[in-house]
Length: 330
Image (tube, rainbow, N blue to C red):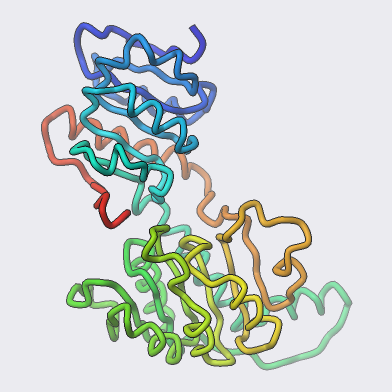
């Protein structure tokens, strides 16, 4: 049967449904699951129909929400679902939100690579890397002054795993760190000043580099508004490694085209892939990444290994890690 993997014996053990391309190489990591685990892997609902009444666990490996929703609704006894990615917008369908079934995700698996991208972006602008490359391409020897990151202010909007990892690197460069989060009392010693969400414009006005690492929820859509962008310094740079919808994209384009801010480095966009002819492609003050800043060697295998480790906790009756607040959406 296409998509069928090993150890299918629904009379005993934990029954795991894996919503994934059955030929994906990262599925080899599942060999580390406890003995006796029964595994079904595939993307066709017909594959899961017979065993659905006995499913215990579902992992969605970056498949569309429609498939995940159909599979979840087929499994009345499911006790835990996991999203391989950190973003859970493709898991936020009404039936799962309303159910008592816990949802976990890959939060924290991609923080290091994304925080390195943030610092690389800051260096790109502070050292004017585009000018360096252009001069090299043109065979031009022309000295110019650049900036240090030391002493500059980095404002982080959305202080979760990505934000805190970024703050650690920013501190290593001697930067001042500001941040926004709902729970302003929480601090790890890296943030010089924590702001509540309603103080967004203050953070924007004080920051030389604004980092957006917000999840995609109804409350974060357009959070970085036209007014917030207008509050930025003309010398400031905005860096988005969260979700594209968190920024008012037309307002950002207008600010960049009008020279109201220095630049932007973007890994995420409202529409992906970014359509041909989009204004961002032709802007010399924009650095683009095709939503792959976290695609480093072994990135997806690492995310799968986290699931395997969490599965062992589940099998042993221990609390799960990375449980999502389904009401908040992250």
